[in-house]
Image 1 (cartoon, rainbow, N blue to C red):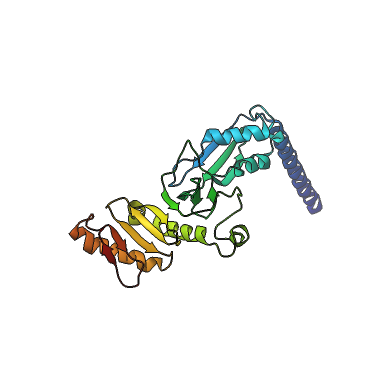
Image 2 (image 1 turned 90 degrees about the vertical axis):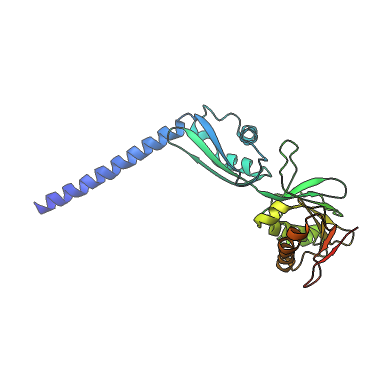
Length: 268
């Protein structure tokens, strides 16, 4: 009798497993041929201005895969859609998934530019927070810190290029660190609420030192090389608080903070 119940139990488990496999297979078959209803594109801009729209992403997908709506879900190449979206220069991350009711969802995170560079040929491009170079968008200009002056670099159309990576040596030459210095300076300014609101422009002098142009006040900040950033900006903030707040923001034309332990001010 015990043997009978043991065999019956094993048979029941076999039937249950077989039934589950049939059900899974049927569900997979049904999902494979289920018509796709539509693709939903969800944009994450973070704190950045809009540089790429849902319509831009949808256009990329259509050019890559053709019309999606109405196609069987199993005929749609999710990886191909993901790669086509990643090819957009302003896109940082993409996450794509499908639902059981026949919809595809694409979560797209846009890169966040922190610096707009205008070189000596008046060509322009952006640098994002991770050090990638981005092309300009004439329809959606980003309101970020601007660097101009003696800058010879042009935009590098390479989505894998990063200013902080060793490829900068191969691409720009071992002695050329101007982009890296601009990036570090912009990153520091962008991460300070006060400096981000106050500093409007970085100017690169012929000797490759930096001058900062503020939004408030008629003065220029002579910053010098992009080194000792903490010390220099602490001096500047202390002088703003204890000096210009008392004497007035338009008293001086130049504020020189590039020398150690001193702030030198002058008029024209």
